Length: 383
Image (tube, rainbow, N blue to C red; front, side, top):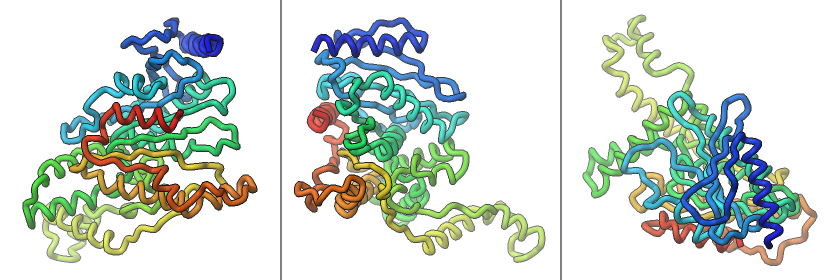
């Protein structure tokens, strides 16, 4: 054990030295974290924080990647009641690696996706054991961090037979799984508030407004949030809304007012908002969502264990429930067939219709953001 621990310490010390830092790594529990600057192509660096495992098991401890919730400041959307870095190490017996992806109005999507991928590659290179088959990797995040964590988990979940580093467990709390569905959510909330005042409407609308503001701030165009790496639910189905037409409603109204057809458009600005709502209604009525087969048979991916949690009054609750249903459907319908085609396996006698239910757990209410419960869950599935 001590020999393995020495090797693991030496690997990290070398990584710190390569990053221009001389902080030695210690397995003694403390509030200190080792900070590493990881190069992201030609786009600067992303900072990675390494928090120590309490057990001092070093090389043989699992690794949990933690992605912060992102720059959403609304108090109506606060997924964590405690700091994951202070609680997860003791209850998961794992090394916690926080990837501080960059996201701002000047550094929009897909920039954070590139940061997370660079951080993951760094962890694989420097922190995993020499024999990759021993690697046990989990990932955790909420809100935007939950979205990024989900996308990474869905694309880096390789079968053990491939001998590739793989994420085997995902925990996400109130993840944003479908940015494309927010406009319809906002419309329905506004209509319901006009027709009937219901308890909780005000905070739900505040959440929706905060999410829409974030979408407008952090995506340069609708195509960016129609990307499955930004809206992971789109790995399993088509978008909630189609991509907007290239010509905006405002442009069309302005054109009609200039040509005088129709004559009722005397001032473009007056009717724009009303016309936008009508056009949105037309798009919604004509647009249908379809299931997609994911992962494709050709990819050697096995969907990881998942813990999807939501606050009971969250506007993201329906997304979480739908996502869990889609993943369970994929596991139940396709996984056994995919395994047989990839590895010439006979039918897995341990696989049954309940596999999806066992592998994908849904948690609602206060237990969802209980860091102790999250840590225990990781300790169980990564053991």
